[in-house]
Amino acid sequence: MTNTQLKNWDDFQLPRWEMLPGIDLYLDQVIELINGYLAPITPADEKKILTASMLNNYVKQDLMPAPVKKKYSRQHLVFLIVITLMKQTFTLSEIKSVLNEALAHQSIKAFYDDFCEKQEKALHFVEHFQPGAGEMVEPTPDAQLEELVTMAISTSLYSKQLIANLIGTED
Image (cartoon, rainbow, N blue to C red; front, top):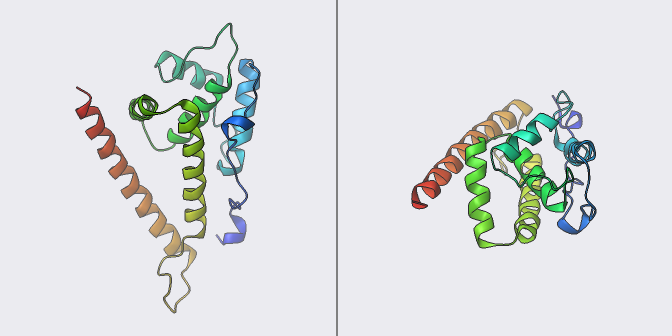
């Protein structure tokens, strides 16, 4: 696979707090909106990255507040964007720990806008990552994939250790 076959993430932006709808939405509208926001970075074979049953499960698992009169606010959208992205790597329990810790120290708006900025920087880094940068040999797509996969594993394992340490300090 060559880079021309990959999606271009340079222009991808998550909607910031102020860009999210300021009106309450119904379940179907929320699902369509979140799937639309994340479609540019979602693998093509994944039709829906968020479904109604997933959303209901997040509420049941106490990862996010319940809707008010079957309507979802800007705050709900934030939770769903963050949870949906984090779910690609972390368990719901780990996500809950991260969210609880982050929101204990800052507003949801500040947390979310900071999360968006960091996620975009990480996507840009990964898209432009070249193993052996500075070397005379042009890296192959296989070498790039191997390097990124091992970095993803390492990042995931290290993050999970940080989360476990965080949970251990909450007692």
